[in-house]
Image (tube, rainbow, N blue to C red; front, side, top):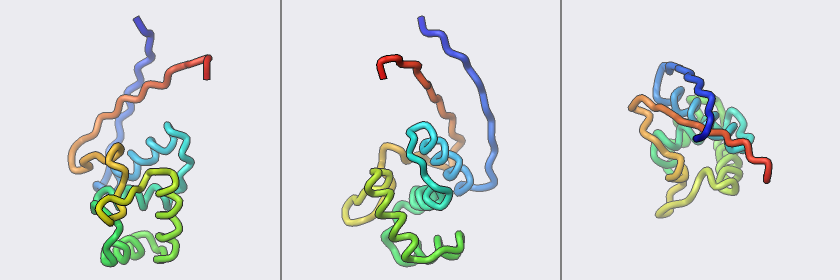
Length: 118
């Protein structure tokens, strides 16, 4: 039987974007992706909108986060290399492995296993 320390952390968010940003920040930390705050914001926004291929979504992101279209393009390229964003049917989307419904409450279970063979 494995021995685990159980720690329960509760957090509330003001909206789906805030929830998504918290989730992707955790995903980044646990997987050592080293995503910047802006990258986390872009991933969260893309997950909620479904893709970042439409000009109106890009404009909305730029207004919401006070950034520019060239910055978005640079971030998308970086996140595609890390396989956080992928192209599916010609659209830039969040990798389906890490997409969740942020309209619902989310409960995460994270196990960090001590492995001396690594």
